[in-house]
Image 1 (cartoon, rainbow, N blue to C red):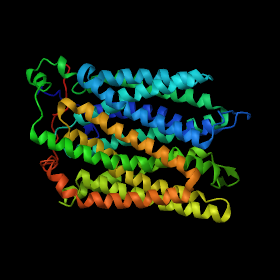
Image 2: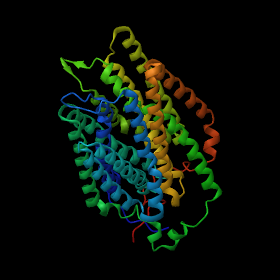
Image 3: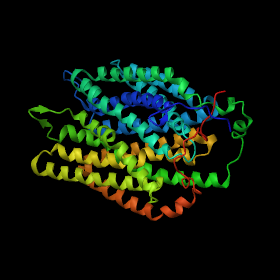
Image 4: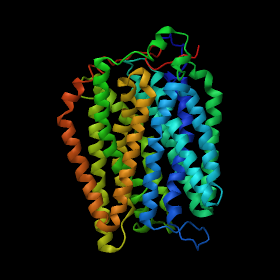
Length: 459
């Protein structure tokens, strides 16, 4: 294994974390900005001043499901390309370039541009997402308790971008023109790409390609077969990915069914002004920014006190909490059936519970993969994780489509009940699953040394 480069720190974390923080912040600004207005653009009528495509809700949610699935499934080839050919650092760069191109093309008001832009974004996210997350893990030594906190900080960066984009891109798209919104998302990604290139000196110890390393130990990793312990850990990861599919299948109602519900069924009047439907997309990001460090601190405190706080336990609890949030949407649906509209506070409460659940599962899952995945398959396993979120997104689209026949109340209530029951079931198997990790998290403490495991030096 190559010797890691000494890393400069900022607020107790490697400076490279903040380079990746801002890269991902702007990438998520572009993605969530476009996501906030995509379904609304598809269903907007063609004969209005801000004309859309005039699709039905079912057609729009179907495309939304396919698109959000493919965005994340593309992380499998993106991770494979990084592991086999480019390394993580170059893959993130090329992914960023594809994203700038994709969002820029979407600004053109032609159908060929619409589909071409979506295709470029799918390829760009596939190259960027798994590799930038793996680089975050490489900044920390195995056993460093700061790793989970580092991923939470990184995750807050994601949601700063999501929060700003939902407000800014959402407003520009709904009020001034959908394609202006798409173009603005591209400008955000360009800013992220520029700062990523400028900050390369702080990423010297991570993201290189093993095949180019001069260290013979690094090269041996490329051909060395997996050990029994590594195979067991991969099994645990794949089982944990079932939690991921269920979680995102429920959570991603936010951009689809809940987005349409906010527009069509919610009383959005506030002090004589109608709140844009897309703005509700910012609630999740806002809550993450406000609660992210608190939730991470809560779990770290439990860890130091010797209480149950394993990654798998956090993920299970996160799924249950998120599922519980859908009972608020059930209440909203009941109110709508009775009065013809539902109050905004139901959406606010639902997003609050969804956010707490997300903070317990999503950044933790990213960190978990960097703890358990074999080094030579680091980016590929991260890619598989994002592919699972993609399948969850497709599931979300299918559930959203079925609301036209079953009704929102049955969909929201069914999601809530299933998530809670599934979470309790996996909780009963937690002990057996964690034995297969062979103590990967047993020695976590306050280690504060140079990174090992995923750092792939360029020299």
